[in-house]
Image (cartoon, rainbow, N blue to C red; front, side, top):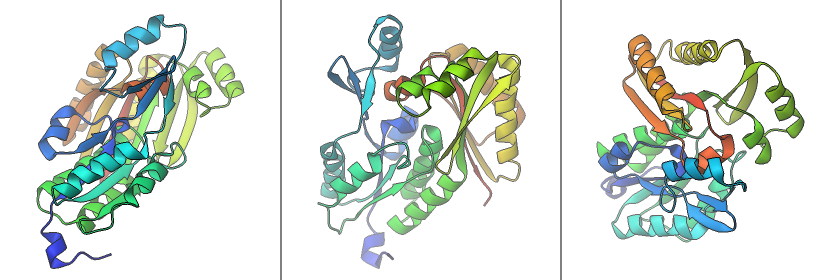
Amino acid sequence: MTATGRDRARRVRLITDSSACLPPCEIEAHGIAIVPTVLVWNGEELRDGVDITNEAFWKRLATDPNLPTTSATSPAAYAAAFAKARDAGEDVLCATIPRRISAMTEVAEMAARDFAGPPYVRVIPTGAATMAHGFPVLLGARAASAGADLDTVERTVLEASDDSGIVALLGSLEYLARGGRVPWVVARVADALPSTPIFSMRRGRIRFRAAFGSRARALRALMKHVERASRDASYLGVAVHHSAAVDEAHELAEQVRREMAPDDLYVTGFTPVMGAHVGPDLVGLAYCARSN
């Protein structure tokens, strides 16, 4: 769909969910609207980053015998964000994580049905989670801040999504198995081996492998992965993610800065909902490597 001249005059608002792990400074700078994902703990629903902070989550996870689960955000939460943008006369591009790992796209699409344009509301899935989802949103928001119309912003997000991924070390596969994302038999075998589980995600595909040797060697494998992916990149954004591993994440970020000199570099903790899926001791690199 091509925007008319009148449509191009409207500002575009980027909306996404908290699993993007976007840095607060970028959210504020570009007016990105964040719909909190939901953590369920002992029957209580807690909005990601609103009702529970990262610090409070990890403290409770270490002591509470009951593990949390996650729940899809309600259509009403998306509808409220869409309505706020519409009332401001803004078009909306809502970016969601892949359908194969979450029902977020279907929920957002359900909410969008009540918003016939103009202003317009479009929902598009990206190819990953965390800042591998957040970088496409960020680059789209920067284009919107520069005055790009809805078609251009959508194209920016989709192209950046193709060029984004994440690779990370896991402390254990137990939490992913609890969430049904890894078979229990795989998790038990992997955790019994003298190895470090590595997962990667790009273009909607999730892969797991074992890195044998020291954790330092496994971290070097993460660096090599991103270096290969960004070999011909004209833009490189990197986010060092961690789940309760702050010092290790900052050390890795300094290494990334020295060896890759990315255009954007962030250190961001996993939000409570993301942390519930992977557990503690994760360290990873989300990246966007654009070649044009």
